[in-house]
Image (cartoon, rainbow, N blue to C red):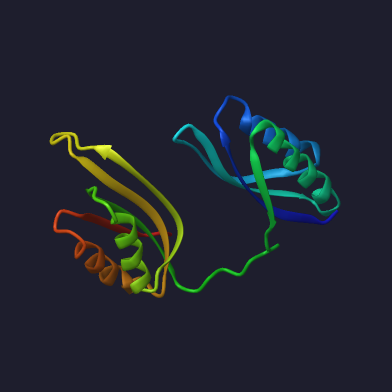
Length: 173
């Protein structure tokens, strides 16, 4: 039986059991839950999941997921590539911590783009500084870079954004 990859994006008011409902629908159609990133943001549940389902079950699963809109959960389904080619370049893990300010994500991503970096995964948050109580911006990212020696260029570009910005870059094995 031919399997297909589906990417599900979802958003709706947060409440217990949302992930269970989604997982149950996928399993009922013979699918497997492969990867996901989900979070509660401003009272809403938002997420993205990669599932694998038999080709013959895609339409039925899509219809069942669309019916969840009646319960306030909007789900979008996209077909993914079966075996996408690995992009060229090296993979780096990046952590950035610095004083939060308006536009920091714009500036941070602009600096990465200027270095020809592809952001494969990004998590950001703000937190209170342990000693100062000031709001700190923190980002963790998995990056695809043109070459392993791009780390120095990336570090310089990000440190240029602020003299109190701490940047940690590690190669991913």
